[in-house]
Amino acid sequence: EEELANVVRSSADRGTMIHAQIAKGIERNFVVPLESFHSEQKAPIEWALNELKVLASDFELIPEKPLKFKFFNFMISGIPDLLLMPKANQKAQIWDFKTGRITQENLAHYWVQLKVYAYALFQLKRLPLSSEIDLKLVFVDQKQTLQESISFEQCQTELYPLWRSQNEPWKINSDHCTQCPYGDICPR
Image 1 (cartoon, rainbow, N blue to C red):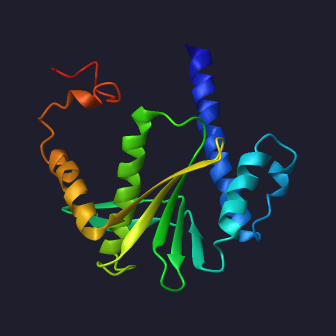
Image 2 (cartoon, rainbow, N blue to C red):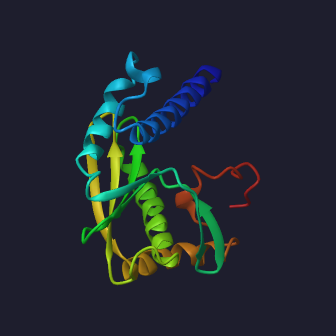
């Protein structure tokens, strides 16, 4: 069990390191940072930077910038991996870098996270409410990108039930039991 915890921890550390190296590479003209150049992490970092380099003339790339915003009745904050804000008439984009394999059970959670960030951009008036945002899950190890587009109206429609469920903590949602840290004290 301890060995498994170390694998999970090192996997999470690897993901954090790759995110940081992509952000650093963006700031350094899309060049893989020296500390990753001769490592096994070079290939996924280089692939991501090459994907972004072709977009740099049309977008302002904003990596790892904290956002604090009103989410219906709550004030929340988050740090999107990368915002691509259009310089002209393109759609804004929000990228979330993922390491490891694509699994169906994680995709729903990942999309919700990106939709919350899209909602933030609308709430903070960084984009007109009439626009759409492209959401991208970027799986760097598999060199694959999944994309959805969302409007402000869709954000509200899809995210309101999530916010509403947070206002009713006494309701049991067994779909979350496997991830809940309170499993040993829950009366379910």
